[in-house]
Image 1 (spheres, rainbow, N blue to C red):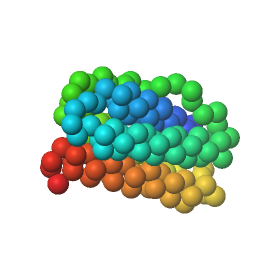
Image 2 (image 1 turned 45 degrees about the vertical axis):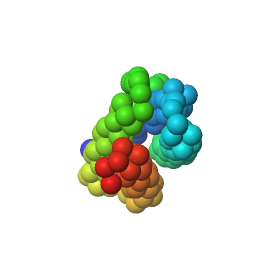
Image 3 (image 1 turned 30 degrees about the horizontal axis):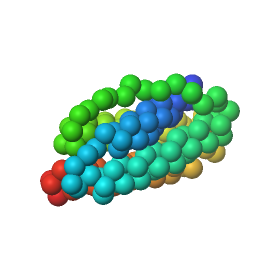
Image 4 (image 1 turned 90 degrees about the horizontal axis):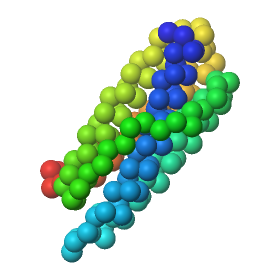
Length: 145
């Protein structure tokens, strides 16, 4: 695995987090109904977590001497509370799967990232744990504990 490939993966992760934050904030503005307020609050809180993930990936890219991406991954529109929650649940699960591939690539890095690998893996694991919490929370909001 090359450092170049890892930088590409980390930039893709940053783009996913950019998109996730924007998507959560947009979706929060379209929720309505008698139980809307706690769902809106939770979506906005998750968007704040995604901003923190952006910062983590940006900092790790900088530590590797790379330029962080300013691009945005694809976002998904949704209508109605259930569709919004389902869409974001799928995106969170897809992100976890993708971030696991980054962990695998870090472990394959060998001597090329000998002094960066543990810190980088720790930071990516932190993001994965947050995303797993989002999965749990979205499942609760969907009534699927």
